[in-house]
Length: 427
Image (cartoon, rainbow, N blue to C red; front, side, top):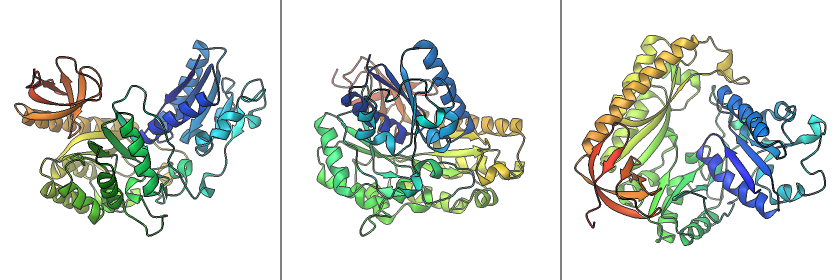
């Protein structure tokens, strides 16, 4: 049996899982399952542990290797699980030499002491990151390219810097080379990913900002049809990036912003670096530069000390910023973070507020879908009958199309969640 990789969490983890798959297979591993964990919430860690137990029941002979942010932060907890053969840190999981070592006798098998299962070094000591070249992304029409890792900021609710380390970036030449290679493999769209994407370049000579990287990619990889960005911190959107959105049609008109809340006191207690007015002003400026832009955001409901009045300002932010795609999280205290020691909002209150945010987000999405009906849109086909528009709105396509192609379709209707496209005009 080949190497299977189970991925939890962010797009960066998805990209790194492909690196893991290729390196583990190249090392000759077989009958192996790698669980690439997420630590953003306690629930994410619980789901990883649950998946590990389920894998052991289904595949009693397989070696199970656990890695990712949860493994980096809590290696001993995972090593203590009898189902686990090996625990790798976030730096170690991308090392070809580490995967080759697992072929050695007893490399990751056998009944050994928990502490002997751990291969996790100090992530804060890592100062550089490199592009990890991969041949493609199995089953995907778009490719994710890691350009940055780690985070220098310390939001009070977030444990991720302790799983990823400090901010470090991939040199621009390496990023361009990776994207050229993916284009040669047939990928039409590339998504730039990172833990703190707008922190790109802070450790590189000359400190080139994200916007400079974006322009370099579009200039030096003319064969790339579509470039997309993952989540951005609104306070770090640089001038070159805003200019690229205004001028570059191949930079997709969709942004997902790490807003988290709409009340200034909550934002201060989160230790965010923007305020409500900053978020609203940025969204308005982006729309002036790119009228077809669609915006999404992360929002947390029930952060410690949040009152109903504070929450109302987060709810109102959806309209104030014109948000369409929402990722909503009821606050969950993460052990080891300052927010976990703050006065907590009752769990049921946080859930109720999260549901209110989601309900308003669904109305906003439905309104956007209404506006799409009757228009022609360019869609990247990701499966035979589904894809996304340039604004990252999901589309159901009839008849079945070739995955990886970009087609012009007319939007006939929607079902409240995705667009329904009529046959392309060429049919």
